[in-house]
Amino acid sequence: MQQQLNKILTEATADIEKALSSDDIEEIKLKYLSRKGELNSIKKNLKDLSDEDKRIVGALANEVAQNLETSIKEKFDLIYRKELDEKLQTEKIDITLTGKFTPQGKVHPLTSTTNEIVAIFQSLGFSLVQSKNSPEVETEHFNFDMLNFPADHPARDMQDTFYTKVAPNVILRSQTSNAQVREMENNKPPLRVIAPGRVYRSEAVNARKNNFFHQIEGLYVDKEITFADLKGVLNEFIRLYFGSSRVTRFRSSFFPFTEPSAEIDVQCIMCGGKGCRTCSNTGWLEILGAGMVDVNVLKTSGIDPEVYTGFAFGMGVERLTMLKYAIDDIRLFFNNDVRFLKQF
Ligand code: DAH
Image 1 (cartoon, rainbow, N blue to C red):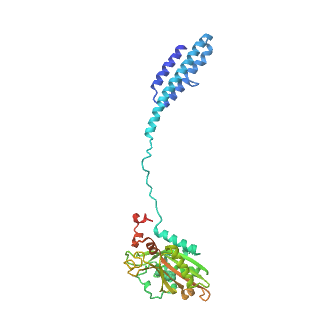
Image 2 (image 1 turned 135 degrees about the vertical axis):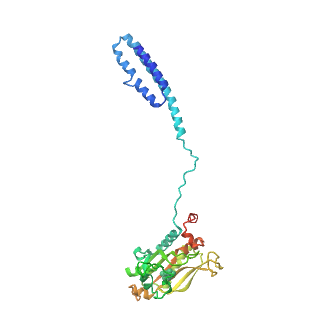
Image 3 (image 1 turned 45 degrees about the vertical axis):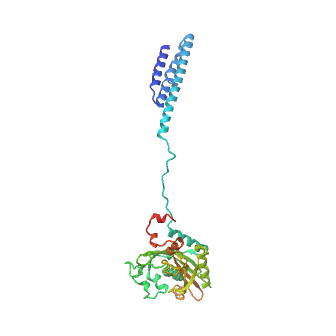
């Protein structure tokens, strides 16, 4: 047995010497030191020995076991440190490296202006028109006839309006005013809505004009609505949108669907009213058309003009955005140049 023990010690020591990984160490532990290991099987046979031999062999077995445990631990510590070093080297994170850049999208300036204007009118008690009452593909009936445009009005001309091939009278709407008519036909007063949307006009594109752009239409119909209400609401809108220091003026005007009609100008932000190329030397820029809903329009839309009156207004979103941020070319909104879009 003593020989056997010495053999185990020599073999195990050689195995430990050869071990290269912590897995090898585990295997060695299992082979020699575990319950089913070689040392234990010798210890199990001790009972057959004389007391004297038991003492000697037992002591030797314990010594061998202790010996092995120590050398296994030493080897394991060595291997473990080596493996850890390797791991740290290969999995090293360089915290000084810059992170990956994830570009972030932004809301388009026309969308944010629309949202801002819609929020202002909502705070004044207006609500958004139902989208079914504000279609972009429209008939001449709602875009012109119902808005009191005479049959020979120049705006209907092929040069201004995009006609489709769907049917002779189907067009791309040239103004959001179609929403007024549909709203009045489909609902009973009081009506207090705004209708933002895209409109189309067959124009030569330049710095000031595009062949599609965006408008926000407003309509307020109720008993006893007067021009004073129109002025109050629109002045408040201008104050909230531009701030109270911006100089504005009401100017009388003409639209087929309003009577009386007005236009609102703001002082040119490029020249401060002195006159420049942007304002065609007038010192003013038009931002808004408005007026009291024409009696004819009320009547044809099924609203009794003896009981109800109302006002309407329409404004260009591109124009209002350009004036707020001093943008001098409408085409910038549609070029999708991130250098421009990133600024908002
Ligand atoms: N629809 C007109 C345009 O496209 C703008 C407008 C003027 C709308 C007066 C209105 C209004 O509602 O009352 O130029």
